[in-house]
Length: 319
Image (cartoon, rainbow, N blue to C red; front, side):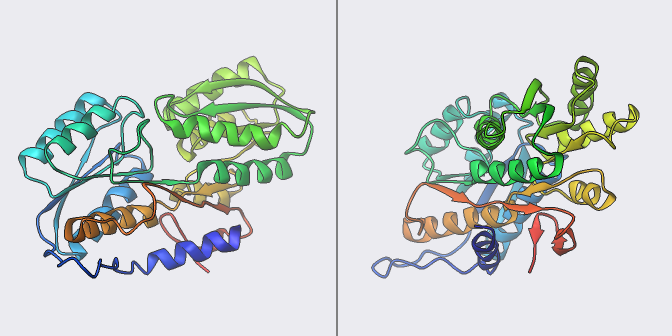
């Protein structure tokens, strides 16, 4: 799986042009593609927006990047702006699995195709494509490494992402699927830290106070994991408590090199952000995305101290 996923990532970075349907005359690549991410203060979403914008401009479009901050009202206003500006397509990282459905429907009513990245909505048949990490596969990879690092016996806690994002539950369930195979590993506490480093720090302090004997922390993303590491350092506990992350952010990679973080699971955001724009371009020109299904999963990769030197750019693991 690891080798196959890495080959897939490298192949996708070639960014091959979509194949046009032979019976359709191609339209020219022009117009505005509106890109809406969650929060570019997080390097994951910053990369998502930057890659999508660069790919759109490479293909001949103009592009703008806005941020919803995971607020559906802000997201709705950004969709309104995209409609007013006569966007030819919208690339959207949805703010809420259910709450973003209305925004997607509004764009569709204005005859603007929507392509979702990173997170899904709870309704199929609206977006032209939903491109996301294979979060269950990635969580299983991380959990296996986590067990290897901490051993098969002891108490641990978990930091959870935003409940409005289906990825939070998928990753947590993926961890549980693996860790539950080790009955002497006991989850004694969990807290929602909403993908945020500061909340990860504060929730880790509370968890550590309630459960001082823990030996490990699982985390739904790198930002929460890095917050937990800061709290553990302050408490003088990091040497005895191991932490795992998820995203593959530059700061997480630095923490692995420093020996503070055990691993991170790399999400191929640079791959599917570009792919979403390519599929939008194909749909604009041919009426088809070129993909066989609406929902598309992209396998994750594991980064540890053994391969961290192969991390050559944000969210990129090279041969």
